[in-house]
Image (tube, rainbow, N blue to C red; front, side, top):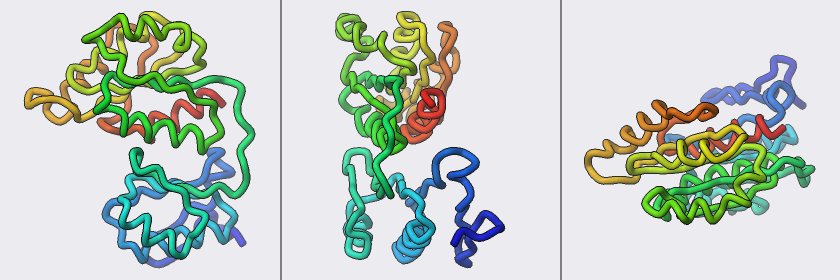
Length: 222
């Protein structure tokens, strides 16, 4: 049973079992830094309370460990996300398009894609269309302009978000990635470019935060 307090106290963690009601999606489990035994107990408690599971930044060895006691657990190794859905989601009408500047940005883009799909969104991927070859993104405009909201994932100088935003009418969520050479400063240069976008309608999440972008896009699409 879901406790009246809205959370379940395991001693090492207080699980927000009321978040599904408040936010429309359960609490998500960020895995780095958590002991495998803790993760297993957290997962079991959410499932006992009939909650969907979404685990982010989960390494493959820990997934293999969890899979032994959670056979329904599915895993996307590129996105490093695992999940269990209690029942299939009704797919929302609006389309979310996830755009990546380069192939190196795809793992972060996939984190956004899986998050969106688990939340019940229809997703279209447009990958490797960075500003070094603008004709590639122009060639994908027919797909991109069908979107209700767009996620743009880019490293290096991070200019793709501004370019895409200038070509569409819907909101754009920009995700800077840590891909790039030294002066990229681990994604800081892309972050600053996106924050300083001259194109209105761009919002920015943290470096490599595909999950945050996917969650926010899901709220907009809802």
